[in-house]
Amino acid sequence: MALLAREDWLDWARKLDWRLDYVSEVDAFPPEVSGTPWLEGAAWESWDEPYRTSFTEYVMGQNRKEDSVRAVREAIGGVDDFARHDRRWLSALKLHAATLPLAEFAATVGNLRAARFGRDSAWRCAATLGALDELRHTQIPLELMHQLVRWDIQFDWTHRFFHTNNWVAIAARHLVDELLLTANPIEMAIGTNFVFETGFTNLQFVALSSVAHGVGDKMFQNMLQSIQTDEARHAQIGPAVMRILVEHDKEYAQYLVDKWFWRTWLFFSVVTGIAMDYLTPFDHRTQSFKEFVEEWILTQFQRQLDEFGLKKPWYWSQFEQSIDYYHHMIYASAYTHRATVWFDMAIPSPEERRWLEQQYPRSWPSLDPIWQQVSKRCQDAGPGVEWYSMGATPVAFCSLCQLPLSAGTPEDNWARRVDHDGVPKMFCSEPCAWIHAQEPDRYGAHKDVVARILAGEAPGNLMELIRRYFGFRHDEWGRDVARGDYPWLNRLEGG
Image (cartoon, rainbow, N blue to C red; front, side, top):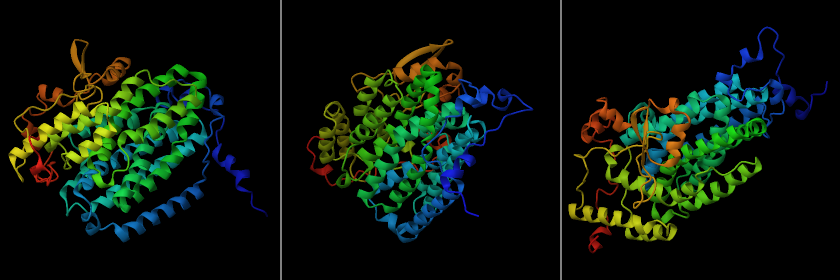
């Protein structure tokens, strides 16, 4: 008996929806869980995505990827191999290793919800494979970094990060928990698969993989590439859902794009922007963060919006301006309070500052004086003398994104105060204030770090906040990567 060709049986396996007899469709797929707009099952029958992967193909493909990661790890994934890297790059590695795995685990939960409440069987099949993907993405960095903990205790934050009240972790959880743990399958498909994975993970995994290749970190490069090949497949869930959503509720589709593009942009700007423009060793920088954004987001994501007849988010001009400023301002603030993070940070040298001026001619003239002052302070302190602002109170945070109020420019900070039910709220920008105003019940009760301090839930003294609330031991918190001993520093005249 001849076997059926793949194309003759695959759709039978993927399209297994059935007519419900003993419960109604609304009972089986409640709108509160499956998402809005709620449509009859017939409206979702055209759902399709290009990969159309069978389970057998999936398992065989993942096995090959695992063999590749294992082979690279055995060859160049030991402590001695990591010890050869520039200390700046190790900080970039610590930053990404911490923010990645447990966010991926939350994505496992989100995909499993879609695997049950997605409105088409092919969607549910793709989401099931997506859940397996995300579980794998959780395990890879946890396994790879575990061996490094005894060598460098900061790598312990690969696992601990999302379990702490560190200010970066609070911001990350606020984004990840909403997007992946509480969003219904339709909102998750747009926010995660369409905006996050199509618009931003190329920046994270493809562009950063290129940087890792230039640095010579083949292990990190291989890990990112192994993850990205999965992301590219289940990212196709987003356009497939978007096509039907636009047909039935284009206004809601536009709202979800506007909301999640801004929320995703802020966090990616911090994590990836800092890694590319400050923590990548200068000799290995081939492109600035801005150039990667222009290539992977301005061009490609805008093309995808055009495909569905959607507009650029209403705040697009502010987004374009923030490319020049936001991650630079966050980094300057974070360097000053570097004891509040789990990785070391560096002062850009005069040569780096000249490069940054070439890459960011619009913004760097107003940013460079910050580093002139920081360099002068480091020079006055002397090599090996670590200075902190330990007696100061923490910076202010946005009531929506939970990140510092660093949007705008040094001359024109975008922070704004809005009273909500008699309670003052501070927002870093107009888009964050707008998102809060659209769904105040969803965001109103969340407390940023400062609000927790004012409520007596966290200590107001920064040293106590770092130790007791953020959970840092003395040997874990961030320091200057060179401990102030920069060869170029002694050559400065007046900073």
